[in-house]
Length: 266
Image (cartoon, rainbow, N blue to C red; front, side, top):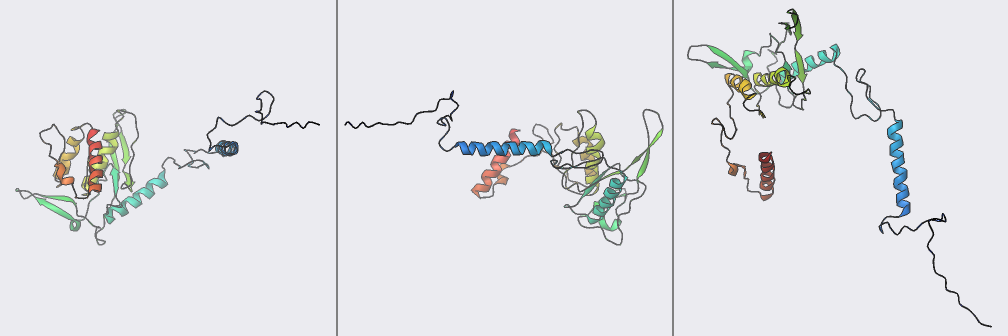
């Protein structure tokens, strides 16, 4: 009796027959199990994103589960809180906790003990911004009369405008508006003048030089500031010596050179 040996070979599954197809088209490190896990994770993320009921109500300030922050229109409570904190920061006189304002209060005066005076040849004295450091507790800054009367160009009637206090400006301030809507004139320039009146150092990047510089530099000079301008191509521009940036450390010098090159390229 003959013994026949039968050789068996694995057969590839036919995609038409409904059997599982081969995963040979995938990279060696990707398995079908891994694809299944990724699919389940993606479905879970999509479900949580659409079923969480996220969103922010701009009127109430409520925040949903998916919102990163919340915002609402400022009311009397927020204005009063900002004013209280701003006056506290005015007396604290710290670069780590500073404030500015829009529409200067008429009675805002720094005590003479904290300020320097500039004496002209005619004998006239001008009070300069306060020195660095806190205002003496014996004579704190007192602010009153924050409402001003302006004439509206539409109805020629007096319109009361109240000082807008902006505390914690050492973090950042963002002014949003359409091009040509008056952001610089109505918000940015008043805040810059507030910085000058408090005697803080100021670096102004004027993209449309000398439009904004001409309105701030002269005021800062009257308040005792030393004005330095770097505007290549203009006669009033100062000169920067690139060798002054060298520290002797190759790593630090390379990083500074890269940053300086990127800035000048822009």
